[in-house]
Amino acid sequence: MLILMRRLEESVIIGDNIEIKVLKISGNQVQLGISAPRDITVYRREIWEQVVAENRKA
Image (tube, rainbow, N blue to C red):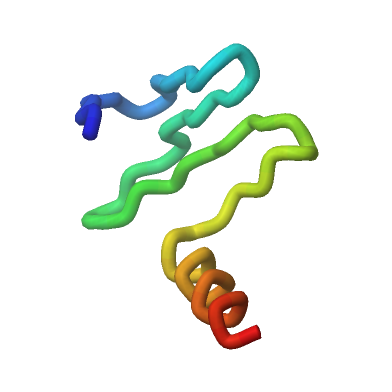
């Protein structure tokens, strides 16, 4: 796992076309902005785990 530190308004670039930017920090919460092509699906981890669990049931 790569671990990075970013400050407010700083970004991380993944590949050629995905940017993750720190938009807001409030207490123990961080608000992220994600810019990615429409064909890239972005999930919060807890939602992704639900999707995987549902797919396993099918």
